[in-house]
Image (tube, rainbow, N blue to C red; front, side, top):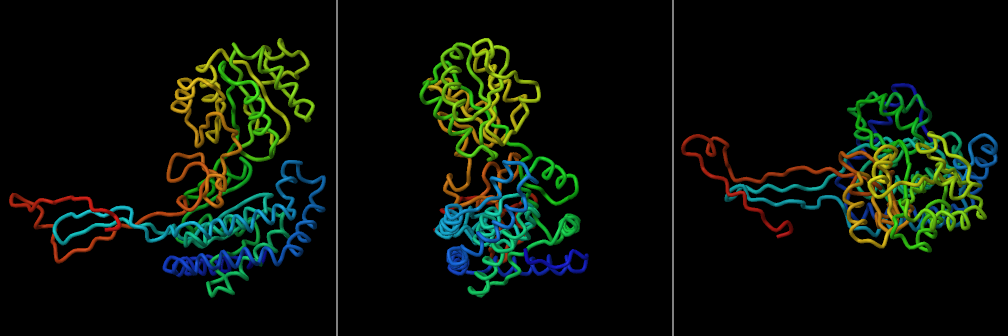
Length: 438
């Protein structure tokens, strides 16, 4: 990516320029922020050959160097590039998230409080392998009025540079500051920014557990992200066999390297003899390696034995751990012990069991009779996502526009003083909620 030096003075200039750009974006009219995204979609279409050529360089250099799941995420093709442009247009079509009145309250006659949405400010996003993340993040940041500093993985260096050039061309052609979206040269630049909570408001890692944990340990700036994507699917005694097999197949094979791909399937003891052979018959011919508990191997001896490590594994490959549990409570206990808080699913035709599962499981996404692969900002109608958050503070699950917003309180008075509302003769507050857009 086109970047400045990682020397402290250069990093300060870069981040200060991002801060100034964020202030500009915060007051930029909606049509300009929408316009830059529409222009970006055009740039992606017009630069397709250049972007794919750059990506081919990265893929060629990465062969045999990075693992197969990372290589799959690195690859771009015409279909992915078209999906990127469509995603940008989808973000452009979303309602303006800024300056929305979230609350209107009369504190007293002539004294009105409003809560309005506003950007966070400057984001620092560090991501691995997936160059399409650069476009998703840039689109959401610009739509929400945030500036963003991007550090992609070195394995995607040429792809990221080509995509960043498209973003900055769109900014130039729309009259918005190029400093709103900038690239960081190296890890030293990221390390320097992690020490500047005065210049960066939120850090978002997209990548491995090691990446997330290292950033969390290195900064006082809030970090939004998830360390693991260990997703489960519980096949209840009342699961429909055909549906269960189809959903496991989709959740495992539609994109095995995704963080929302299923890694462990739990089978109710009363249905295991019916469901497990059906899974084996469907998945093994498709190249899936099954690793099972002793009860699974009693039913299908050809299954490889699972070890304790398999219950905590995020494979990112066509490998699936399978385990027989006594009942719903057994499934819930396993998920509590081994889940990462990303996405958990149940397959059942019993509404009461489904309701119990949905209420009990503590995860960012909890699904009934649906593939875990639906845990995605685009599929949720967010247009795109900057990442997945498994924390409980601020944003959770796929993080779209709302996760990049905060709010301010605006108070409009007519000379009121606090002393008039204190003491024995205190004037009472009305605290009357008003219709937000009235």
